[in-house]
Every structure is written in structure tokens, then in C-alpha cells.
Length: 115
Image (cartoon, rainbow, N blue to C red; front, side, top):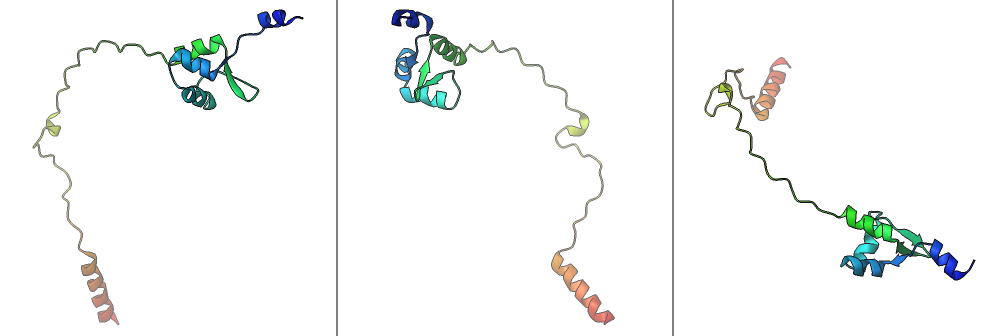
């Protein structure tokens, strides 16, 4: 098979530099994305290579679409009476525990009395 026949069968492989120029970005960005496996590529001869399909897929992967028009927010839900600010809810009576030093002093005095 002649060289002309082989070139018609094999896809054209572009370098990272060519892809970067086509996309308007840095060569580092293209290589880094390929290294992280975030874009499609071919690794031939120790270098990243890209087919036209790879480049088209890179463009598709990084497409951004406009956000949908914001919809009207739903009216706020009514606040239950127990959750209104300043509302007092009945609950268990809370009491503070005594300080540790007081408990320690009581336990020592009890020990001295029983001993």
C-alpha cells in the first residue's frame, strides 16, 4: 500500500499546540485536561494527539447554555403559630446542674463523714 493510500485510511492527528490554537487556549490547558482524562485524546509516541472528532467533543463538553428565565417564586408558606417569633412553647422545666467543684467538695465531705 502506498503512502497516499495509508493517509486516506488513517485519521489526521493534531498536536496539542494545534488544538490550543484552534480553541484559543493554552497548550498547557489542553495537555492538562488530557492528562486528567477530562477530554478525549490519543496518546501516541509519548505525546497527546487529537482527531477532529476529539476536538469537536472537547467543544461539546465545554458548551454553556443560557439559564432558563427565572420563574416567579412561590408565596411563602404560612408560619405555624408555635413558630411565630416571641411565641412561648410549653416544654420541660430546665434546671442547671451544679458546678463540678461543688459536687467534688460534697463527695469529699461525705467521704470524711463516713470514714
